[in-house]
Length: 91
Image (cartoon, rainbow, N blue to C red; front, side, top):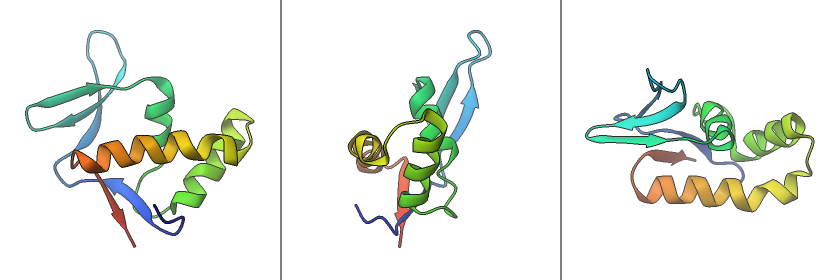
């Protein structure tokens, strides 16, 4: 995964909120994935404007953690979602 790539939700996916629990969800046709607060924070920054490096830096600042400690988890999450077609990594 390139640091200069710009992650964004695929055109058929969107973030939503579960009406009952109030938790964030990743919604796609016939799919609703419950997101934990960390995954939600990552996906909220994936707007196709920010690079992967910028997403990591913003989350490191928000969670007061070293960027290198977060990189593997963020790349892993985005990689799994990209494999399933929910995230697009634009170059």
